[in-house]
Structure formats: C-alpha cells, structure tokens
Image (cartoon, rainbow, N blue to C red; front, top):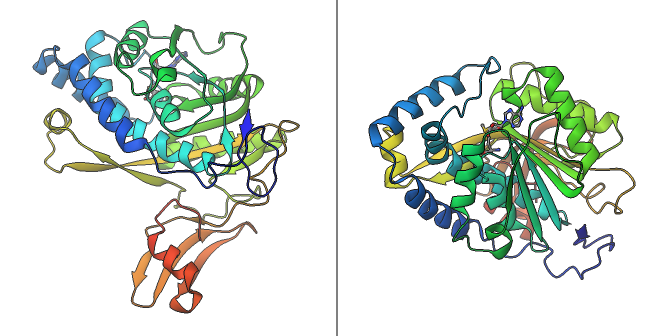
Length: 350
Ligand SMILES: C[S@@+](CC[C@H](N)C(=O)[O-])C[C@H]1O[C@@H](n2cnc3c(N)ncnc32)[C@H](O)[C@@H]1O
C-alpha cells in the first residue's frame, strides 16, 4: 500500500498527489458510456426494457433476493446499461474521498463486482494501482465486464481479472483494498457479516457502498460497527468512531451526479440529461498497517446541500466530536469562506 500523506509521511512515494490532482472521473465515465454502447448495443431493445423493468421492481423491494438478480445475459446487459453509470459515479466519489486522505492501493479485490463499476472508478482515482480482480458469482456479468474493459483508458483496467467466485468461498488472496459495492442487499444478515469479515481478512482497507436509502444506511451502519469493533480506523464518511448522531428518521447518505447517455435515457424512460445517484458508504483501514494519515485529520462531513446565502454559507454537518448540527462560514472567514462556497454535500467542511 502506498500512502500519500501530507501530515504524517509514511508512504514510500513522495506526497506529490496530495491534495489529489484533477479528477479523471469524467474521462472514465465517458469511456464507460462508449464501452456500454458498444457492448449492449446489439441486445434487442424490447428485451432490454423488460429486463430493466424487472430490475427496477427488484431494487424497489427491500427483501433480500431469493434468486440471483442477474439471471440471464439480458438482465446483465440491462443492469450494466441502467445501473452501472450510477454505481460507477457513486464509487468514484467515495474512492476520491479516501484518496484525498492519502489511500493509494496497489492491489484491489472487488467482491460481488459484477460488470466492474468499482474497478473503473478505482482505475480513475488511484495512481499506484497495479492489479484489479473482480469477483462475482455470475459468469455473464464477468464476461460483460471483460468486454467493457477491452478499450479501457488505463492499462491496469484493461488487464483487470474477472473471476468467478461465490461469497463464502472467495479466493485466499490479499489486497491493499477490498471493495463491496451494492452487494449487501442481496444477502441476509448472516451472509453480510461473513462477507465483511472476509473483506477485512483479505484487505488492508475496506470500502462498502450501498444505496442511499434507509435500508442501505442501516446495512452500512452494521458494517461500520463491525469495523470499529475490530479496531479498524474509519476513513469516512464519519469523522469519528462514536455512535452515529443522526436522529431517528434521518439517514446518512450522499449523491453523485450521473450524466445520462441517450440510450440510458431511453431505457429509463427519462427526459433529464442527468440523474443523482444516492448512496451510503463507509471506509476503514486495518489496525497495524501503515501509520494512518487520516485518523486525526478528518474534518466535519457535510450532510446536506449547503445553503449558500449572500455573505455566508450554512451547512448541516457531522463533527469530529461525534455530534451533528449546523455550521456557518461567513465572509469574514476569508479564504475559508471562498472554499466553503465551492463545498458540496458529501465533502468535508473546509
Ligand atoms: C447490484 S450488483 C452490484 C454489482 C457491482 N458491484 C456494482 O456496484 O455495480 C450485485 C452483485 O453481487 C453479486 N452477488 C450477489 N450475491 C453474491 C454471492 N453470494 N456471491 C458472489 N457474488 C454475489 C451479484 O452477482 C451481482 O453481480
């Protein structure tokens, strides 16, 4: 693992990318849209629409699936066309946030990685990445993932391995980072706990992303509890390891903007040229690994769209002391105010 740390210098590389350089996410998102157009373009549109409707219905249900959701090649194609741009956008945002705290893995395992959305996001964010392995139980999803990366914008993504594996029988390999993206809802609680334990056993850092719904947040909280109980240090979004301060009825979630292609709009029957993907997440690093650049340096996390008024910006935040509440940055704060005007929901408070 390479750490790019400004305050605690533990990495083997100099901290030249801290703060992170200009994001490559838009370039990768565009390349992914092109790859999806090429790979899914041949599928019969009516079948694709029917499969998309089945997926939408499934994702609206909160019960764990009793059968694999990606049940056929058409379902896989529909998932990739309909969901992958959004899961890719969420993952890019999350991995960007942990990269900003110095995490720069050389190797990555993606549990339940399907068609490879997290791999695409990681390749755009992490500079030191050398190997990516996507693991999933559905061969059709892996096959489409392989097809998508053929002309990928980075060599590490183009040579990513897509390997069949089932939860409970992941290969006994280690990686700097294990990602678990939009998988837990397909498992019961016992399986979820086992999968997270497997991720912690194999990775030095673990990132879990779920839909930004009350249920997704509940699953993420459960993972957070397990990570803290095992002595792991949170990299985000929480700037503390105390109990979540959000009150009943509220849930911690964020949003990532997704540009919709014409195909994407047609499939979803949507008119807007973009959508906002809501997600919940947690990331942590193992005890005893590299010294932690992030632990003491996380700032308050912005929990809502900031209210930008004339002369001040008002935020709802989660603070490092474990409380949640309102913060105001006024014009008098100078440079901090200027940065506050650019801050968004999900960012750290400048
Ligand atoms: C909603 S998809 C998410 C795919 C990808 N991670 C993403 O973010 O786009 C869930 C994935 O988890 C995989 N999955 C579910 N249960 C699994 C299991 N028991 N073992 C391996 N993979 C599993 C599914 O096959 C599917 O590809």
